[in-house]
Length: 297
Image (cartoon, rainbow, N blue to C red):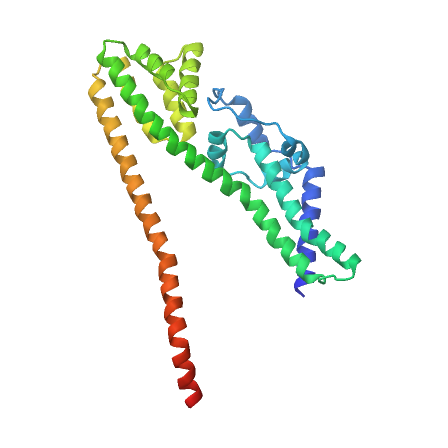
């Protein structure tokens, strides 16, 4: 019964994907008109890469997966942070799903030809499980890598705030302080800040607007707060040095608190193997006595 259900579900999903690929649904007239009359959206500051063998091999599966609403808005921001396009991500998901579905079946066919086949039910169940793992694995990797990059960006932003504050204390203007400070730093975070300021210079827009857009694309609220403070200094002449120093101090305090929390969590996780070893030792000691009591009954 389980085998028949799995075969039926797989056949139905395959036919549905084939039908969507051959006859894609037409967009509604209202959606087409809204896209045609919508104001132009500025180009994103973060760049994505749409090359590689995965993007070419899994390209036919990108359109059906997009019709399902994949990827979601949160995952799309994570993909922008790590520099991977949504097409490449969806193609990778499709390839891993198909590979996980076919690998147990092909292995079972080879073993059957060798005379020691495991049957039909086990390869199908294993294929479905591996396909589910392959479908979810790229999402988990993207979220983990994006979270790691955001943490590193916050550390670099703290150093950048100190540099801007020192440059302002030396008598520089807001624009020159932002540009001179970002030229000193190295690494992925400073490259994104430098790209945002270069974009603002080329498009003749205020630098705080580019920083605010970068903060929204990275989903880093601290950068948006920095842009708001610099905006007050650039438009209303507000004193920004004290505000930047306070933000840098608050950001470092928050990072120290997070590091202490992670260290405490790691310490608690390290105590679990010791507790398991202790319980095993107690069971090893109590087993002979328990055996004697049970044999005497």
